[in-house]
Image (cartoon, rainbow, N blue to C red):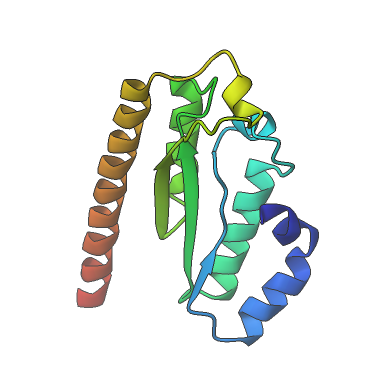
Length: 146
């Protein structure tokens, strides 16, 4: 949970510095602070990404993964673009289509995103992920040759 990561960032950084951790999951869920507030998530996007950068510096071999909910009620295209921008900080940022579960607070929100729009955003996210991974691989191969 990013809240605990932020609350205990010093301890987490010591762990990443002193131990060999191959993979970690930091579920950011959205790159939009507005959408995180609607999701009732109590952490800051910028602060979380700053800790992710510090973990990467402390432990460059650790694969840092995340997941994102795409199409949450009220998500604008601008919110979605913020999520794409945040996703680039992770090695594998997995997108998940928002699921409207009966009885949840979000299921009662009046600004539901049409399924077609949400599915389109997930597809764009996956395409973006493939492009980013391609360029990371190309950069990795280029630096190996030098």
